[in-house]
Image 1 (cartoon, rainbow, N blue to C red):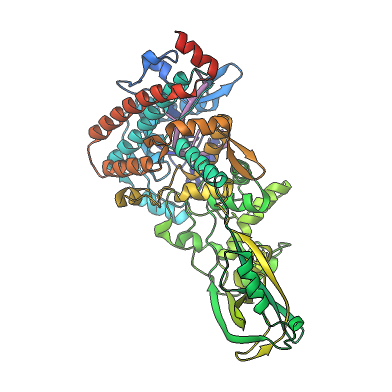
Image 2: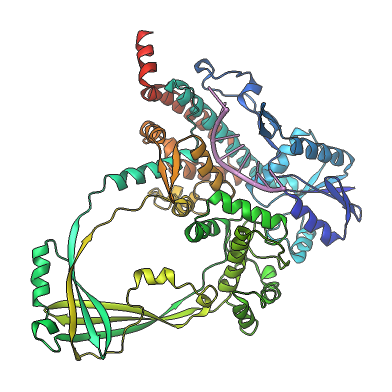
Length: 616
DNA sequence: GCAAGGTC
């Protein structure tokens, strides 16, 4: 019997369906001589410190450098503390039994570093010796699955990928566990002051932006606005120059030849420029872009959006949610027309779905090379029933984005009019000629914000028009805004883009900080540690967060570069480089950061603890 | 009591 193991039940079900296997058992599916089982993500993790004899938090134990790492069942929190997650224990037992009966194992965990780790940890934990082959596919259409099974790879082809995954895992443990204990112990408080490769740079970003914003000194400057009239249609133009003092601006405003000053037609049209601009549709959503959009439009937290999506996914209404790709392959694209046709009766965008049925689809979101472990989020075509209002919101964002992504370009005309009257003034306006993809949601709000003159009247160069109003505008330079969940998610995705070292920047180009699946959890961790808090839509550091930032801000652990550096080394390991030298470096860094935190953490001691320390 | 990674 061959056993196929997937990363999650949904994938195992898809594969079983292609084989025509449909005998459902507890924890697996049987049929056609195969058994299809699954994990629930990581069932196993690197064992916590106490399993190496580091029973209590103590400076004497630091740094904790286990000779050999152990694996233990994923833990879950109960009222009696951390216990083995019962669902993981049960599934592991199922897998164990199936592996014992197997002649061969086919590994169908996600095609990536963590997918490899999920399987190998299970395989080694169960001390399994059965031969295994690797299924390597990035979409779950019937064709992709069949094709993948015709091209099964030897399991050993992925040994170096496992090595890089294992190194990632161990390095995060070593640096995170040790730095956390060191800082917490040194601070003398009883609270946990956690540090890690991802959470600490994230905290640093929030704190540094907060301080930059708070210490920003706004500069006041002035501009002059005039109102020009063309046959009863007024438009506003702003001085091209800005002025340092109010007096300068008043000088300019006084020179404007407006009607009130006795000039019937004092506005001289210098030039009119009208340029058409094509605006291609947005790409399909990945998790992060959807979280950002839901936060902007509805104020949903990243965590809440993920949980709504998970509900929809479990209800088989949307495809896999924790994807980092905004593209689909040609195989999935082939199913898009029929997916779109399911929305022709939709109350909001039925009309656009019907229209798309009659036209050539835009293929901007179709690129198999940019599909990684999973493709972009799509509706499945199943009919939703009884969604909560928030679930409906998210579902509509997924479905609506699909319609947008395959729709036509939006064609705009951007008009700029230059007016001379004492000084030079400019008016600009945007007119949408063909809505294209923008017809789907028909949201005008977003654009109106920056385009005050949505449309401008037709004028010709050389025309002399009356100026019906004029005023001095007082303006201020603005600081970069504080982070909110949307802008932070974006920043995490693109973290590393500004790294100077080209190699490190390259190593991070496809990753950023954290992964789509973990970014929401990182934000929640920082909140749980009392490092940051939500205030209205913003994420602001607390006193604790700022003082931890003060201690670590110049350390490597607070820089996105650390991830870039690791990614570069991990990629080298994946292509065959030695594991030992990277492990040596990590051990050395663990010693360094532990010493540093034990020293620097003392500055976090509360006044009483500090006095006690002096007495002692 | 602690990381980051995955998922119900």
